[in-house]
Amino acid sequence: MTAAGGALIAIESVAKRYVTSSGPVDALDNVSLSVAEGEFCTLIGPSGCGKSTLLGMLGGLVSPDRGRLLVAGGPVTGPDPRRVATVFQDAGLFPWRTALENVEFGLELQGVPAERRRRRAGELLGPLGLGGFAERYPRELSGGMKQRVAIGRALAIDAKILLMDEPFGALDEQTRVLMGEWLLDIWRRTRKTVIFVTHSLHEALFLSTRVAVMTARPGRIKSVLELTMEYPRSMESPEMVALRAKLWSEMREESLRAMQ
Amino acid sequence: MKVALLRLGLLAALLAVWELAGRAANPLLAVPPSAVVPALRDLLLLRSYPRLPASLWLTVREIGVAYALAVAAGLGCGFALGMNRLLGRAWGPMIAALYAVPAVVWYPSLMLFFGLDAASKIAFGFLLGFFPITLAVLAGVRQVNPHLVLVARAYGAGVVVVFFRVMLPSMLFTLVGGLRTGLALSVIGVVVGEILGSKDGMGALINHAYGLLRTGDYVALVLVTLLLVVGSDVLASGLERRARRWSE
Ligand SMILES: Nc1ncnc2c1ncn2[C@@H]1O[C@H](COP(=O)(O)OP(=O)(O)OP(=O)(O)O)[C@@H](O)[C@H]1O
Ligand SMILES: [Mg+2]
Image (cartoon, rainbow over all chains, first blue to last red; front, side, top):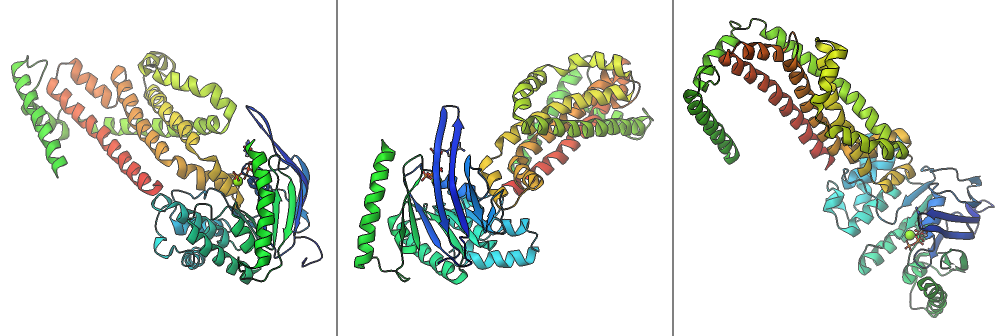
């Protein structure tokens, strides 16, 4: 699976503890995972197990207390938008920018000329179902639309690695399925490396080449499932049904632990 | 349209009350609007106070300097306190408390220190304008959503870009409001300073007319000064509206 002889992303025994006014919180404990170029790797696990924290580390926004993270062989020392683009859990749009201007943001910071970045952003809005909403401000958009603008903003900078933190969390079931198909299409055409966080078993099984199940806090990697089925996948095949049952039981265990 | 009519109505009513009261009272102490018109004409034709243009220009310059200093110091202090959590916690409340002190109490010492010339007026206008600007910056910095700062950093923004692309737009409305209040107070500071004691400027002319009981001239001078204040506020509110449209 490895393209160039090594993993594109290597997470080596990282740990993270947040110190808050009400005491320390161990978010991650000894997480190791490596992701090869072109993979679609999904993180799934109970709420609060540190998935967003892990993505934050990969994006260079959170530093680990122990362990290290390598991207393309080099340690992550800070945000690197030429290589890594992030879709945040809550869209994080700039309220004073229109949908189009939000999508343009990353290109603007990279110094892409106005006309070119406008064209590029405009091309992205159509497939995101935002064709008629380019000039709208975030407060005029629904939750799902905002999330799609955030996806557009990440895709616009065309980084090799795409970190997506529950990007479809705010969408209705049908749109979610459509957006999943659309993302699959993009991923297969561009061969980006995607790290994707979701709570949806369906999404994980439908999209991923690999699913990493995380334990309840402090988060660790509980198990990793390799999915080798062809795309587009049928959710009804016996293989899929068996995988689904397996994934469900692992997650159930952790979710129960997280609730205690 | 209705708003304009209502405004005109109020103005007319006020003028009528003023006229009636002015005619009834001692003409040395009060003047009806009908008596102000000739005084205003004499003033504008530079018959009563030939010094008017020079005085007006001096006052405008004092306001300009006082406001420029207030903006520079207010932005500087505001951002320094806003960005530094410890300093902000320690000194922010003290600034808010000082703002609540009636500023006129400082004026005698300013005059002792800076003398009767422009410097003490500028210092007073500065003092009045400084506080609302500083406090607006402090409040504005607190409005910035830290998550958006994180998002911007993820897309490659450094300190400078975060400041101009995230912080300024987030706080723009509050900031411009503070700048507007600061301007109004700087104008008040300079004019009040001139009235309380000076050799030149609009306040000195007002003082002169008032002291000699030239009540018509006095009112005419006040009207000209009022024009200055209203003019600066109209300018500022225009800027505020533009900022609001841009930041929303
Ligand atoms: N900045 C922070 N300061 C303090 N604690 C934090 C911070 N960020 C996260 N945490 C804590 O760390 C733990 C992991 O948080 P994280 O957001 O990574 O979880 P998550 O797996 O993404 O959860 P969810 O599925 O609900 O999004 C949580 O207990 C959270 O309260
Ligand atoms: Mg999360």
